[in-house]
Length: 130
Image 1 (cartoon, one colour):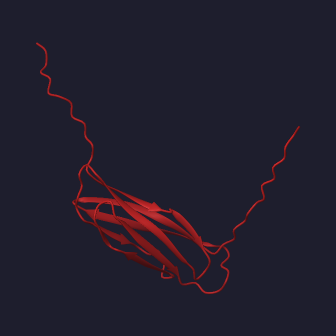
Image 2: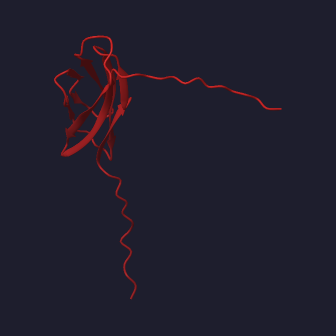
Image 3: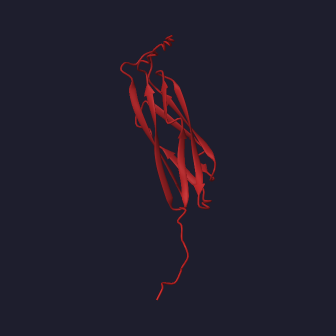
């Protein structure tokens, strides 16, 4: 005979997404960069999420506030560079891991930071041809 119809089941997921804006910044030595970290719930997730960020260098000081978020909330990650002087050549690239944990779910992402280096802007020339 025919198999019984047990209905359709669609898994929507449960937990949260973790996002950063911007994902990368560039600063001068001794400068400060700020990132916004967002937590968006999925599938009715309502637990408090704890954020941590790790500094890859003793020259970088990280401040994360707040460190505990409710779903749909945002936090600010402020990174202060400890290099002195006005130039740093070549520039130094850092990747800072960010982890969010709550309700049995863990998500990770990272942000990038270039300290020093040289920025080059190229002119754009528009020509019209008859």
